[in-house]
Image: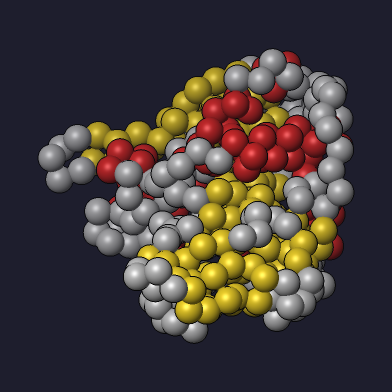
Length: 313
């Protein structure tokens, strides 16, 4: 087995090291570093990337990886390697924001440029130093400012490696999701490195169901490759090929009646929209049979707002 070399830092088989992907300078001359945790077995096996904090306010993924890197089984892998990056976007995490200081979304900066923008430099370093070492990975995200996503894996069903990895992870929901330009997932796929995207919860709030599902999924994935030997609950995943959003027909106060992740039938009452002065103005009925994969948690909504994300059967 060869040594791993990440930006001139060497990690030998059987070693655990915390290293730095690179150092970036802010306008205040403050140095921002991206810590990387590398766990290596002395036995050959796959190399798994676990990454989170692509957006600085997506705390659930950060907590998932924090739990994983403190797990006793990870510190004594039976085979293979784990590269864990709890916070990719350190500067946005510092400010609790989604975007970089220049307004860019880091997950639209890939493959990046060595002398490009702040985000482009981070993307370049990930593509140069990390992606060539891995066999596959999981990138952890949450819903946006108002959207609470039920725990789910997003991948491209047309690629067998993607769906096979997702089934090993075994989240409650597996959703067919096409690649987007400028993302880590798409650029890694060009190098035949499948990356699953895990979505769970909403930004700046811990969702312990989403966190537990993410941790258990990682353990199931590693156990399937005999990297670890630990007890982890099994889970039956539901595959969703198509999806749709239910939008508000009127403005007002939104009350959701069904729990996130639940199965609903066509014509089920999902929630209501009330005006602020006492009356129920609109009942929200399900237009399809399917699963609730995401909910808008903002109580005050306007006509046309996306309210309920449904995965169709």
